[in-house]
Length: 290
Figure (tube, rainbow, N blue to C red):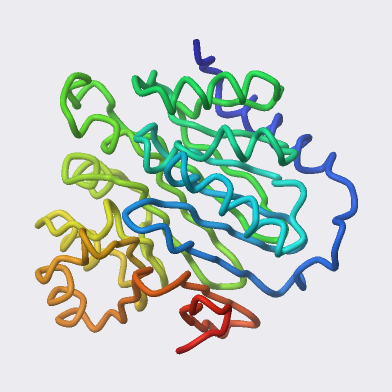
């Protein structure tokens, strides 16, 4: 059902798709500014990346979050997404995708190269069928998002994971590294210890300044290895009252000198401008607090 094509063809398709977009409806972000908004959706992921007039939405939360995300995009004047990326097909990542695709123009849709099982996955596929830019990422893919370079990494060896196991979808998560203005930002989906082990065994440079922790900050020895390898200074977790950050993870961040943020009380907004990184949490009334 999902097509596998070479990384070269993927890159070309993305290049022409991104270049085809017209002038944005509202004033674009300055070319020297990157804004990452990790939305507050409880134990679910949706992350908006804006750079140089281009935008990418990574994941869409649960089905019930679709309307909220549409309001958030509208509030930012975003009527077109250059890229919609679904890291994997668990319902708390793909659930709201059909609603987004029903209302927002999308240039390119990226997803992992495996078939999901849940009803939210099939709703996503039906909605995505109307778009020519659906791409299953089977090889590392590098593209430009505005003035940022973005590389998307699929699982290095999918055959190492049991397709019938509960954690299979998580292990198949797309992982994204974004390079912009001397800063590096790592988005880990719900990668679990097997996937992280593969990441660390590869020759990819995972060093970064900022990391969206995998799997809502669930602790493992592999997470500890990844954080040490990354050298990150800031970490963001998507959590809820029922599934807060694990104490072991919080202790790990403290031990490594990493400043941690979570989405429990509001969206976490990161701005990177001329080499200066700022992070604030939005309150319910839209105000920001450090």
